Image (cartoon, rainbow, N blue to C red; front, side, top):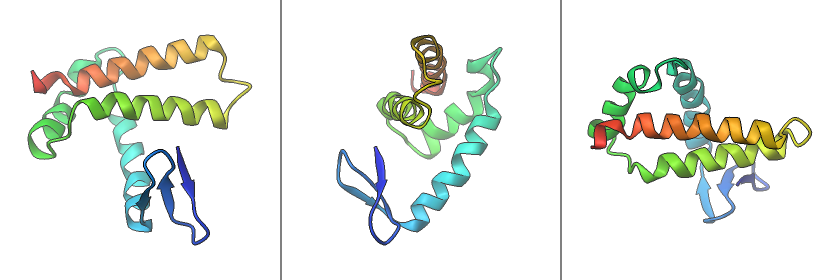
Length: 108
């Protein structure tokens, strides 16, 4: 889980990793761009270019996609405890698994 210290810097509580304001800002810009590319009907086709970029240019380890999916689920559960029912949890988990699989497509 990402928390903030006294100076406003965010850090990963699980690993104790400090994320400076610049990194935090990059993440805020990256997430909306990432979600705008997702096409629900064809996840693999819709994320093909993004998969290629993460595999060949950025060289992101595909195991990180699953970790990110889990982190997003945890944050959603914390931020929206009443709305995050078991049904919503299953639906969101299924969606993020599909996104993770689509992003891992070019690694094969």
